[in-house]
Length: 256
Ligand SMILES: NC(=O)c1ccc[n+]([C@@H]2O[C@H](COP(=O)([O-])OP(=O)(O)OC[C@H]3O[C@@H](n4cnc5c(N)ncnc54)[C@H](OP(=O)(O)O)[C@@H]3O)[C@@H](O)[C@H]2O)c1
Image 1 (cartoon, rainbow, N blue to C red):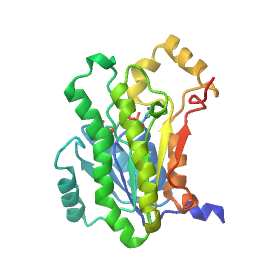
Image 2: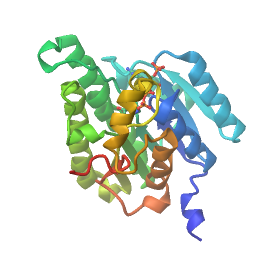
Image 3: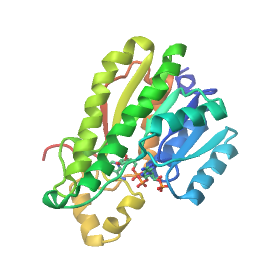
C-alpha cells in the first residue's frame, strides 16, 4: 500500500525555524504522519509554543529548542541539547533563514555574515552533527529550503540568493557522499509563499497582482504546498530521491 510508505512513526525530526511559516507547516505534516518533533526557533516564544501544542495534539512528542543559529558554538550547544534530552535525529529539515533586502553595493559586512552564517554555515554544522546517528541506523533524511533565487537571483537580495545557491551545491555534494549510508538529502525551492516575511510586499495589491502575473499558475503559494513535498522526501515514499532540487513555485522559475 502506497500510503504506508509515508508512515514515519517513531522517527525524530529536527526542524529549524519551525515556529512559523513553512517550517511550522512541515513540522505539523511530519507529526501528522508519526514523527516526534524538535522545534528550533530564535525569538518568538508564543509561536513556537503554539507549534508545540499542535504537535502534541497530534499525539507526538515535541521539544522546544530556542537557539540562534548565528552562534559560533552551534555544534557544541546542539550536542549538549541532544544529550540532555537523549535525542537521536532521523530527519533534519533546514528551514530557518535570514533575508535582507538591499542593493548590492550597500550590503554591510555584518549583513553578509548573518545571512551566510544562518543560511549556509549552520546548515553544514547541523548536518555534521546529525549524520553520525543517521549513518549508524542506515537511515536518514535531510531537506534544505532553498529558493527560486538560487538560479534567478533578485537584484535586492544578492547575499541571500548566493547563500541559497551555495546550500544547494552542498546538497549535490553530500548526496554522493551520504548515499551509501542510507541517507538522502534534497532541496526544496519555494517561489512566493504567503508567510510573515512577505506580509508587507503582499499587502500591496498592485505588487501582489504583478507577482501573480509572473506565476504560470497565477496565485501565491501557501506553506502547506511545501509540507506535502517535505513529507514525501522525509518518508520511505522518497527513498529513491536524492540530490534533487524541487521547485514548489507555481512555475515561476520557468523561462518566459
Ligand atoms: N516565504 C517565501 O516566499 C519563501 C520563498 C523562497 C524561499 N523561502 C525559504 O523558505 C524558508 C522558510 O521561509 P518562511 O517564509 O516560512 O520564513 P519565516 O516565516 O520568515 O520564518 C523564519 C523562521 O526562521 C527562524 N529564524 C530566523 N533566523 C533564525 C536564526 N538565526 N536562528 C534560528 N531560527 C531563526 C524564525 O524564528 P523567530 O521568528 O523565532 O525569530 C522563524 O521561525 C526559508 O529558508 C526561506 O528562505 C521562503
